[in-house]
Length: 160
Length: 160
Image (cartoon, rainbow over all chains, first blue to last red):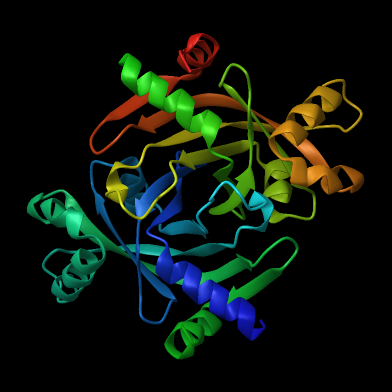
């Protein structure tokens, strides 16, 4: 992937706040909106979700998920040229007692200060998504397949 | 569903230009961005996609899909309160020779005038998505399950 595309990908993942999460529900896809926290190495994402939500129940029974993050549609650009990335990976629930919880909570609240209330609710917990691969569309016909290893390198060493 | 929520749903579906499409790929979910055309009755959506795209190949081998349409994140609102709808349904390819093609093409081009070039390419075709059900989140904790029948009624008779 050329440097311009790599920079666009890092910027996309870091700037957006919402993603579309695809889970398996009774053998069929279900897509729902989630907030996400990108890892420092971009091959990891974290979600903070309620066990009452369908997508959470789905991830508990089937780890394979997909996340799509797309540039904001300002209504002016040709929407076909919006940058977007589709990630595929495996989701794993993290216990609220795990050592990762406190630093994730701090990072989550720095990104989503309005979400404080959810840390008071017993049904919310973090999920870790380990990226298997990604497909980045940097514009019409500009498609890049990206491995988890490449993604990790991008975000650690990227220029953004 | 209360009238305010119904109006929000109709407005959301009509105003957005991009959706996240969930397909099944090798038994796992794949989510990718697509443009969509809502039907006049909101229980039908159409996509115009390339057979070279993964999601198209997926829909040809497994009809069950999901579409998520979310309000634009302006970066100011609490993103957890963004309206979004998750639709589940069945996708069916429409031949470019079918009688539906010409009216769909006209409606697509009225909505996406930049897409004219795609009608010159042999690998693009319409897919019809028949909605089975939908789950509408009108805000934090305001969740409505909506049947295809209710969706159809909403959009035909909705106030927007």
